[in-house]
Length: 227
Image 1 (tube, helix red, strand yellow):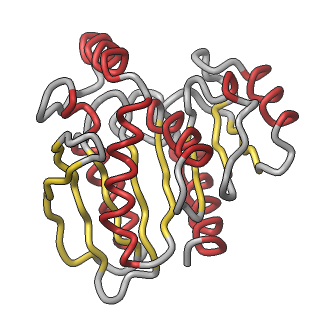
Image 2 (cartoon, one colour):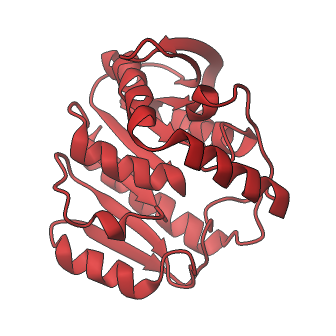
């Protein structure tokens, strides 16, 4: 893994005129492609920035749009019960349609780097699934424990998708994950002996073994479809 060269915050404009910030992590050397990193309900906080930095270190031009800027700017939450409550409130206020406009603008901003994928966590997992089904220009989508994804199993993705779920995730019951897998036979659905949020090393539900395996699988998928 090589180090990334720089991280900057840029201001972008969505199709409806909304201006928002996005965190951009640039790889050392020529990018092998680009990746949109979609936040959890906690904003573009230190964890999401570190995720973007990690993908930049793997050679991708990574961008994390601040989707809560539509409701309240500069949101960076932690993981306490109060933060979870606030994050859910901000997510509910944001909806899913307008954040997809911001994701589309972020996608357009990095596409010069080559084929572009999307990876999202929690709420971002759902948005990564919706983006795969509704937006053009994506080469791959990787939703992590996307709440609501199984409920959107009737949608048809426009790009290859691989999905990660925790078998102990009470927010996404495993039987609904199995139903999603059956409804989407072209998608590789990975499950782990882990809880919701298992990829986040700042949460009590972090599972290092599952996170490492999911990352290995994600990078292999991105190498195949993005570069």
